Amino acid sequence: MFSFRSPPWDEVTYWALDLETGGLDAKRDPILAVGMVPIRAGIIHLGEAYRTLVRPRHGGRIDPASVVAHQLLWGDVAEAPPVEEVLQDIQERLGDGVLLVHQRAIDVAFLRREFRRTGLRWPSPRVVDTVDLILRVGRLGNPEIANDQLPLNLSRARRHHGLPEYQAHDALTDAIATAELFLMLRLVLGARTLRDLR
Image 1: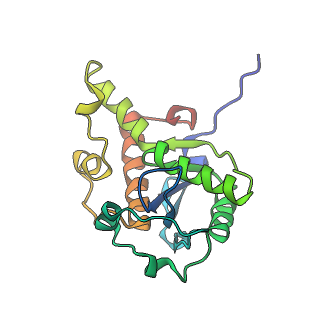
Image 2: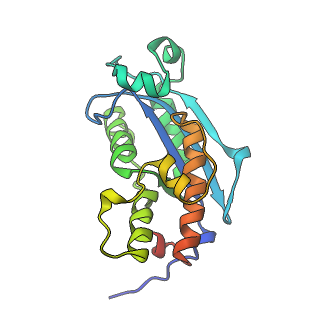
């Protein structure tokens, strides 16, 4: 069996990504906004940030509960770039590194569905999830702690680690918040390689 060396954590480009969606059902709710920001050599590069609203393919429902969170209505996204164009922008960025998310079960599920529906090839990026890292950090301090006792919500996790509070539910702001949380968790874990973070 071959063993491949994992690159040092800071030699990898991470693309922190957040989506705002029309609900939490990855089978039917549309993506309404995308925010992405890269981390290169351990530094968040705000000048390379990507933010866009998204015009869904075939309409769809926006859950009123999601509107309360992100304040996005159909009129806001009616003239936005189509989802196919946005997915190509995402694909181009992910070809350059690792996908960094907070809650892979949501963001990755929505992205995979849209890539499949539009006929684009899912780039199958390596994924680092800050929720997974929070669970690992929690177990370092107390191996017996239950998952529901850990601060898994992005805002709560940031508060727990002494990071400033940001207004939630803006895709780019949440991507930046995820990037900052990732850097803090990496430090707490003492991760030296990409393998240490997956």
